[in-house]
Length: 232
Image (cartoon, rainbow, N blue to C red; front, side):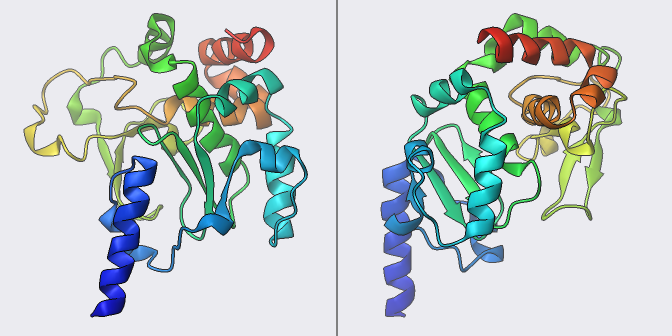
């Protein structure tokens, strides 16, 4: 039908403009997501006290952003394109350099997504120091330690358990496209591009619950502390 064709054309235009990939899962589960000029913002829109229709979102956004050191936000602002506010799960597009925020975020969600943008802006995944911190405590893991979570979140995902993780989600593994080729007896590949939530969840806890992160993962705590205090 004509309406569907028009919506698909708008989606193609949006994907071309933002550099993102089409996510069929999110289209199926969040069919009412609409991207338009009225819900696309720059970080300066918030800094300039622009008024938004959803005051609850605006209040939470401003409260959480105020907790992130300004020099990190300045780096993010120079690295991202847009902030999209929508009804649907939050996320960050490394390719498109866009932050996506649910209009009804959970506590800490905004900090978490900005942490992904900070990780990208500072090229943290390629840091040898960060890689060592990530792999510490996982040296004896094999692929047999991988667990599938099927009930807790919007969709199933794979993860590993470790006492240093502040949340289950911090141990998530992005291996959905690799699962059919995994050698289950092989050593776990604790790569930053597979364990994409390790830094973002750690950063969120550093900002909101620092004592918890410090007690569970002292090395990651100090790594983020150095960034927040010295911008390195």
